[in-house]
Image 1 (cartoon, rainbow, N blue to C red):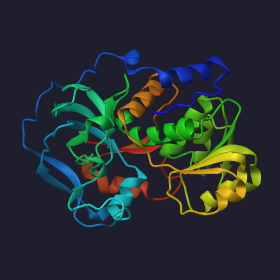
Image 2: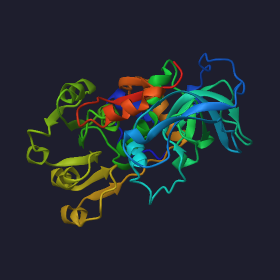
Image 3: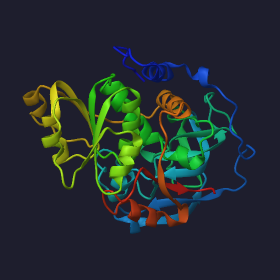
Length: 359
């Protein structure tokens, strides 16, 4: 992952962050975590959370299907845990059909953490028995993470951070890599800069706050309810309750904004930026003339899940820069309830909801 190499001078903490991001993976090699004995599954079938139609959470059914086999370049993972992301809801509801045409039924789920059971031809980065995390989505060449076993592209997996549980590890891939790419690669945040992170109590926002603070930024964030105190605990310097305050009336002259909300929030965010600032959005907003009007850069971020980015995230976790936050966890057979909980409304979940596949 490209990393800004500009003015990263400052306190030792800032220098440490850059060193961690630029470190070669070999610098962080460690013994594999203790896991169950390696080997192929002793059975041919597994449970998987699937949809045969688009719709609400009640469209999900737990089916018994064949365990997939790793093709060349792929890895078969015995899934210990996964987690729910907004994109899982978009896929389930059919809101991404144009971008990701799927043949139903299909197994849902992006984030995965588990143990390698089989590697396909050409895979040398991981071995059977190793604990890994990453992405196993059907939209990214995988078989779906909400299952007892999942196939994933080897280039979308990495060894798990040391001393991290499978549940915590499963909460990180999509939100962690998204935040890392936004803050470091696109915004190129440097000490003393002012950064606004929307949705500070959510999965992506909570990680972005931690990374931006470690980069030496002054961080403001929007949240509500119990998320206000949570965002302060993460290190945010200014926390704005978006239900009672207008962030664009309180903030100005900011160097960067990270938008995970979209809609009116995205449009109003241009007002807080200084000329030459940058707005990075995860919501795929429609094109407008606002970047030209406010003389700023607007970036529509599509997260690139790759081993190098996961390795960089791992180093930040192992150094204590990033701490995962799992609000609650549900077993696989209660995944409908987990989605309903996730979709209840803003401020109802802090961090992530995990899915426990293998206790």
